[in-house]
Length: 135
Image 1 (spheres, rainbow, N blue to C red):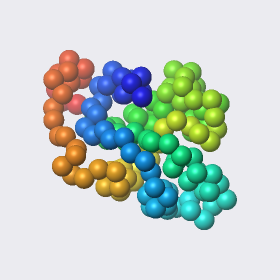
Image 2: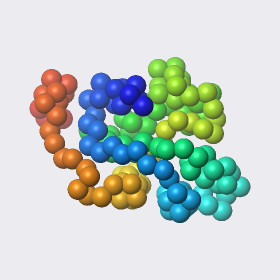
Image 3: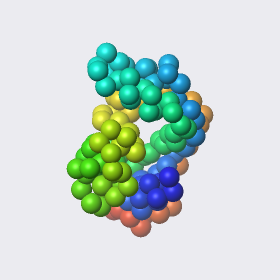
Image 4: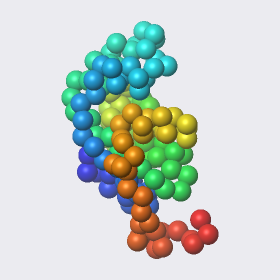
């Protein structure tokens, strides 16, 4: 987990929430509601509920696009070297990480895993060294 977080921080993103938890079948069905009726969902639920997960809330400039680019292709076998999945995953299904694909999805998923008071809003001291003031 440390290497994944370190990559996000090195890119200038802020981890504003972090929590280890066990995903229940109910939480899995709520999180992946659009997939529940699909043939692959049973395996997805079995996987996501099989061990603790670490939920991260990440903030930063163009964060959704930046995180998804950093993760690489969903299929770890096809993800480019240098991406998180390309370097750390070797499975097409158990692909190491999930990331929201839109602002709306991010807001919905954050509410599933974090209470408002569990998210920290702060200005990273390093940001003044990592991007221009007008970004």
